Image (cartoon, rainbow, N blue to C red; front, top):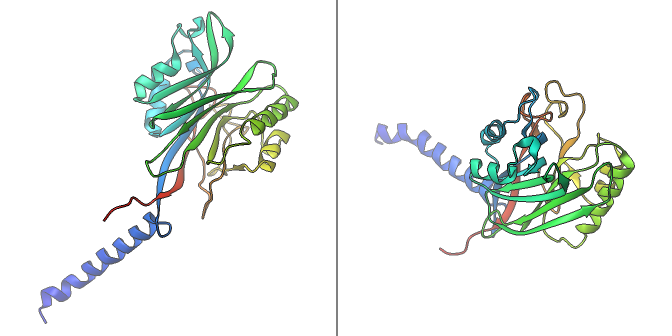
Length: 275
């Protein structure tokens, strides 16, 4: 036998095994295919960093480095004097090349104060969920997107619950649960829950079927220079996992008083038809 063919057999075997491995990871079952999207959540404190400087481009640089497909943002201004009367959701969307949607809590300093979602995917629908009041008015902002043509719709919900009292947060969690009762599609809650693990508001969401995803290493997210408490999370419902993905806390200490969190979310979609 030709010795050059013999020498080439190990390489051919490696290529064949690699192909099989890739095929197994890409197709979850007959007619199904897996895809992964990256999610981020960040309380940006209207762009005011720990140096007391409002710098939205710095916030954009942090998010650009994370390269997410969907971003839940909290403490976002639209036209407020404290942040230069800028529409921050629109500005960040432009800087990052993403669609933007804003949900207002209340009027503030000549503008509006609230939250936002940025998306690389076209936004099919937006729902603002009014929540029980706390120290300030509160809402949750839901956008419905389709991560792939053959994927089911995904509800991505930006969260910013009351920062003062757990009974307020529990009432807000109950309102959100009621608002999402009819959803049959997968849901991701993302953002600043202002509640530490074991809080009643988080337990209530777990009872409603939401899974809070564990974090890699230290899960603390606030305050950003040296975090001592964990209050920012991802929670999902209607998504099954072989192994639940882990949330990563990004080591950003200056751009806001929270650290951003990110996660790679695996989703199952229909296998494209055709030859």
